[in-house]
Length: 132
Image (cartoon, rainbow, N blue to C red; front, top):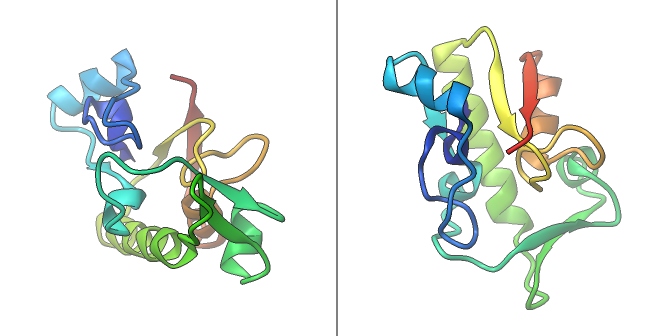
């Protein structure tokens, strides 16, 4: 499984993608299932850029931090919903590894951990961050 933007899907907040050639290759061979937590949370394309305020993805899941868009609107419910739907899909597919887009409030791992990454790690999934 991989963040959909890495697999060539134009689903980033600004309607673009950040594809990765290795992920694209695996996707073209049917070896990758793409997902986008922000779309699973019905945030749409395009959408306002969001950031985690007062913590990281773990804090959002613990309800001690919020996800706020650039207009100041709270998008925490949508981000948590997207993370939960992604986790459900992962539980169904049982992937060996999940490739996550770097620097994302949903999928990031290094630095500030994203909401979806935090939930997937709690559930025991192996994640690998991809710089793209």
